[in-house]
Length: 453
Image 1 (cartoon, rainbow, N blue to C red):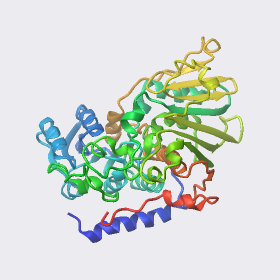
Image 2: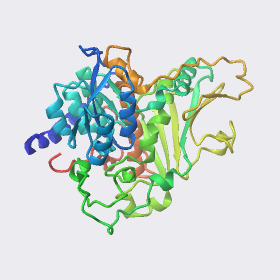
Image 3: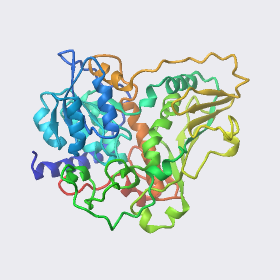
């Protein structure tokens, strides 16, 4: 186990790296390929409950992967994973796992709550391990910038957990956008209005003051809290799946799903850092100081302005996001069907037509009659996890490597900053990582870690 001074040095490293990142460019090339000498990937799974359980099973299915270590703060999760992988060594603290396994593993997947993504992934990268990290890449904008730069510098293989980016629908949507068939792009509308998601994942709050218990013996609560401020344990409020509600742990609905919906648009249009961002939010949340200090709103409308390029109609491109109680305009939904408009989708409006990319479905060119004879450049599905493994073993570059997905994640998380200062237009200086017109928002670019982390 590392001592306290070493843990404190990690925080100093983060602060120092954030300062250095102010003037550092994002390199958009693929990290260097590095085949495992054995021809097999020695892999460790960090987080094996919830999404982590699915991730573990995907890696297990690859013929050339040996899962040699598993780590989870919940011993019940570890027990289930151990029954599936009886030869894997087990840990409840990822720091101890790296200490014991550093010379035995080639790669890790990070499948834990957002607030601990960075500290685990950066530790792996500094040890030159390949990293598959669930989305969003990190909790904070500054963390994303540092992780992207460090991964590129280390030359490790990386993959963001945007599994839908490897589906036929999203891959085909990217190719259609690149083809220019809809003309010059004028506007993009992204939405995630999944039925039941508000009630299930976005609790109103405030944090409970009753029902507080000692953490169960199987749950290592201090390790679960990690970088976030300590708070008492309450059953079924934080661990396992409800943590996204809370600003300390999650990034809200747009941070969670935004990377999925944004991905094909970002790639297809070759987008760069935004110029500005502003958010409209649920009124009841905006008017509640208690909720604004602790939870994410149950509805958001975020608007980014991006620099234009050869694929856009003008020198600026507006992209809007809608979730919860906010929906794309009726006239936009009516281009497909106002009543059957996909709850989670991206609509890209061009000078010669429009492209609808429903989440996890094939894209649709609009108006359909105009593009009836158009042969879509259909790309096949591929396994997002296995593509990462193949890249680690010397194969082609990954679909969502950090140099590609890092800048996109920054843009998504800038939306979460705008949510916290609603109705305020934030002008973004990407090079300096600051809002020069509204310095009060700069504190949300990077949070302070709990002492010892």
